[in-house]
Length: 474
Image (tube, rainbow, N blue to C red; front, side):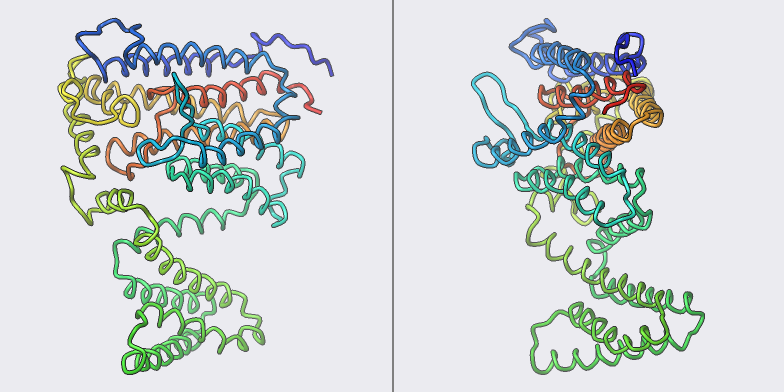
């Protein structure tokens, strides 16, 4: 097939216009967020808005460079790019500079570089390359496990920094696997795990464990239509639990009640295994595994939350769930952000007129909390325009991904959508107090060179692949 194309005619200009619109709006809002009456020139390089202008010019050059490279380059060098960026993620753990409690940056004489922002691009490329070569058969574990490893490896490296925001972004790439054929049961299991995670923090673990046992027994009754089986299982679990409780109460005196219940469920499963085998009761076996896994998960979350998670992240989750109130400490950022956004009303206070912005009530207002500047100065209408622009861009990229002829381009396109979506959702969610503060930028909007370049590279590589969608990659 003929490979020569007119790049300008094939390029999706709608996405490019949305990119430029978001970048320009972001630049002006950074100016508003850190406005200094002694430095009113927006091109002043001593201020953040002046530096952001340089980052924007560099991002445009990066985008153009990504477009003019042959599309086959990204296909053939996907694994090399992934490997190189994983090496940088490993090296930053050793040679990186710690900023805000995370060792995520390489510090140079005149600028800083955050490898995780580029690793998202590399991971999306590698995932696309793997699923393309394996014909994306995600019904087989021998395909699912390596695909998951591609995602989880950078997630683990960023978790060690620790940078939980980037870790969650990498995990979001599992959405691509669901699009490509992974069982919806895995997705449902993931959603149930999230719900169970928050219930573990809100409800006494022993009571929650009892509720899970009752739920499992009801499911067995519903699946088999025989109440005697469910009742018998309940009696067996109760008797074993009572025996272990008495032994612990009078002899051991050191085992938690939820561990006793978990042990009782495990032994009950062993006792009724003969019934499952003889009657071929697959539904009962699946429900038992669900119960056992849920109880293990509950106890693991409790231990991890209280003994592994850093104090500041634990406090942020507790504040979000209403377990703890600290408006002048850990919860200060979110509290001030909500006040700032709410004070904007319908139309906002006007550009450069935000009082919360002017008096620096909200920390990191030009980066992680840039959205509160929009809410205060542009109000609900301005916020609606910004959110609408992101929504339009995401929907446009989904449309572009669906029209790709190659698996590689489609998978990569959905990788771009997943990464941008989770960034937008979490960043705006942080600003309005519906998700914990984990510190990730708003794409194309927040101050920072690494994030802007990383997002630009991520987007424009896909636009390059889309422009050549009628060509064969191999």
